[in-house]
Image (cartoon, rainbow, N blue to C red; front, side):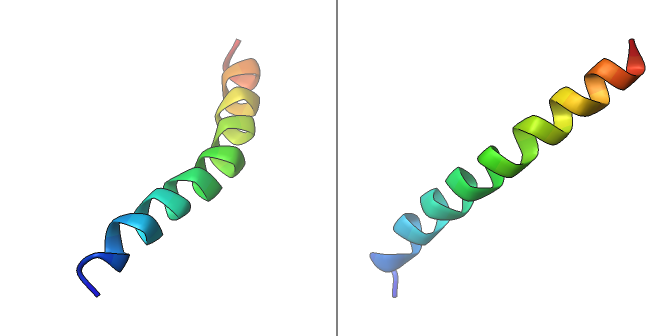
Length: 32
């Protein structure tokens, strides 16, 4: 489980990054 955790975390961040970046960009354009 210990060696499997970092891979899961990287995958999680990779997935959230692709989802969060467009949302952040959208929020940024709305702010301006």
